[in-house]
Length: 505
Image: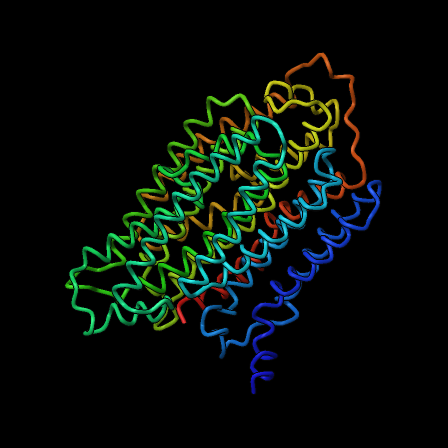
């Protein structure tokens, strides 16, 4: 019976098992390959993670069975959506690292990326407080190391700030978890909700609200939302560019997957404690954080001179946009009896936006990595004349920036459309209007960078930047996916929305 249970549960952690095996393979290759062949480790890591992204399609979840491993892991369609984007983000990050002289032959770098990816995939499926924290730290600790991977002052400062802020936020979140466990005696998030809503729980709602705030602080740090964003610009600027790209997408995608699962499960719309509706309180938190993140991120981005710092503040604003979809989840009424289509639209919008953002941001950071490798500069002004030095890089960067701005035919247009539409359907028209106004502000600083690339002149206009095969593949794949998601978004959005239904099961 034990063997049967294990085999039946195997699909639920297939990507994690695959990543563990891949980590061992990468470690062995790093130990035994000669130095001049070490770049091959990057290709093995990238190909391995890309192949593992296919496992959800090979082993589709059984709609009748979702809870595995003592209900610590959920194997449902929503977790599979986020696992795919996390694995693809890890794969592209490995290719990006292969483009840089400082990381290309560092086999230990790819091992740490794989371990962080493993933690992120577990985050997307965790349904128990213990597993949530283990997955969170498995993701975060490797990221602290990666941020300080380059042995210089900026990278060291980046890693230290990330570690200090991250440890502080994790401690606060863990305290919130301990309060919830103390109130209920359960670590499973669905059991916690059942107990809080039962007649057995007779405590005042205030301590539960305090625990909710503590947990929300931890999530706010992970998604780099205001006022927990202070680490973001310095870490983005100081960390190696491939690491910055990975932190900006994989960690954020996993955190949004877990945030939605946690709050929908622990504080559902039906939960009231002493007449206080729990969902109303956390929706207010989400909406406030969304507005502040959009405004602060876009406003401070206007003054940036370093492209990585600009993308850092852009990332803060993008977290604000995504939180619009999170707010729409619980605010939305069901559009069909028992179907929960309204809330599912919010989850589907967040999932689609994170997938779009993953490829878009990695595209932008790939261009930055190639440019920095060839010129040693990350200043926006030094991008002048890029269209004449390499028109393909200029085109790729333009598509990435237009996607972040939400301009068709790039994927960002439908990403923002789905988020704003979910808000309108949930009766949050004012929040959608704030989002649109902030998107207009953001368009200005994205267009400034595009203007520098195509219009401004540089003394180095005649110094061409060559693309090797790895660079061409990295830019080509990410650019094509960004355009495809902008031209035919329906299939992916429907996949994400159908997966969202499992969140309410």
